[in-house]
Length: 309
Image 1 (tube, one colour):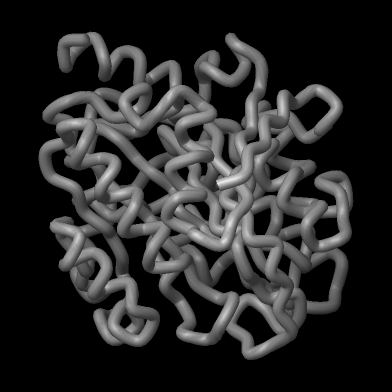
Image 2 (cartoon, rainbow, N blue to C red):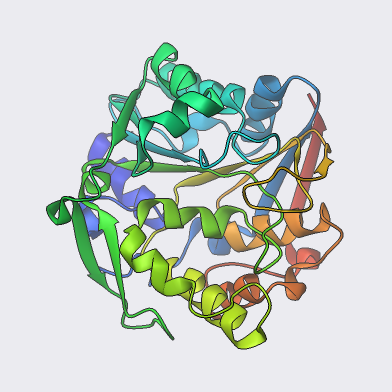
């Protein structure tokens, strides 16, 4: 497949690239909708192998990353506590798979200081894996691009780090876990890692940990943000994660030893809620994402594929 042909396909997959910059990226038919929503789950103690197996169930990384493509990767690196950050071996494996597919530049983007990446071991995994760690200076407003959200219910404008638009492929690598406010965080909420912290502060209006209206506000903002950003592929760390005192921890840990992959982040989040004893319908953010047309919330309509790694 030629590069230009792939980028057209990426638009269907939901990739954000320079071709779609400045528009709400999900006003289009996704591959998930065209082919039926599919979520892949690999189980095993070798988390790198589980990552490979999950992506293989979807058709392999080559389906999403063409030769020469520039790849942006977004792990969760916000806390060093166990069960609070994406496992380094999952990130390392994602980088290696992209390299084997013939990708060009591979970079992890973040506005979190490098000390967070060092504390979690993710910085070492990125550099030793042969990728680039790009830390964005929060004080430089020119490094964030304003994107109007005409379909946003509460959030009317996102501010996405400008270097993100240099990349052809976007791999979203969150960890699923407890959240003190809306009870759950995963693929959808991870996209706040590309949005300006100044805008993110607007999400946390009032007492978002206890008051229903403030939780509704937070979750609607996250769903609205997802109108601007569409991952090419999500690879979710559900190997071990916080079930209490999230998102930073420390807290109680559950260890399903699973890696979850797919294009439809609503379906993925809906599945991952079951690992915390809930349903997608229990989480306002996931319901609002479904209402925006971002994906499927009903797991009965999702093709779930599982494998031992």
